[in-house]
Length: 213
Ligand code: PRT
Ligand code: MG
Image (cartoon, rainbow, N blue to C red; front, side):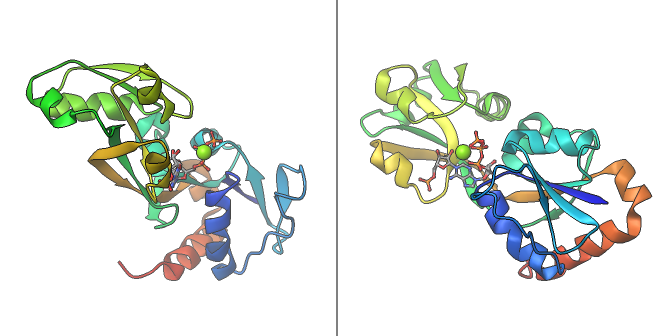
């Protein structure tokens, strides 16, 4: 049995076409059932649904052989011990710094002010601001980062941006792009050896379904 860990939402939705290219169709709709283990048209392949930030953990400890997870999750601290063979070029976005439209970020940075930054990505943020020589106090949040500058909790946020609509709706502006993010295929190292042939077949099918880069 090959077990693939996915998170509900964009990762699940955008992985489906890649699975189809590998001849695998998920036979249950996660939005219509409460099942966490989904069967596929291949009797030897199943999908497990986990929280996005739990995908690397499942794969690392062998609860799943393969998983699809954002580069943000891997770089923030979930990537240890995982084989990361493919950039799937899905769930694309960027990790950016954003502030209130009326906050002068450039001057604050130039003057060497100490910034308070709210984010789910404390490790990535610490490294980014340290590399710029900007002093920051980091506040860890688990969601709704956009609220932090509006309520005075923080001067800035570090969050993922795709269309920019969420920032716009909350009168925030993107002032720096830290990095581009996309989803990666991750593989359990032991599974790669023990189940080499079926895993290789899935990797190859995914790879050939990607736009040439
Ligand atoms: O929701 P939950 O807490 O369970 O986990 P999660 O938020 O990590 O899961 P999910 O499914 O939202 O995100 C999974 C992965 O999708 C992330 O790890 C990213 O790699 C990737 N991804 C791509 C995104 C976005 N685009 C994205 N836009 N993840 C989150 N967003 C959020 C962003 O945080 C912000 O709140 O969408 C909002 C901005 O979107 P725009 O389009 O308004 O700019
Ligand atoms: Mg989310």
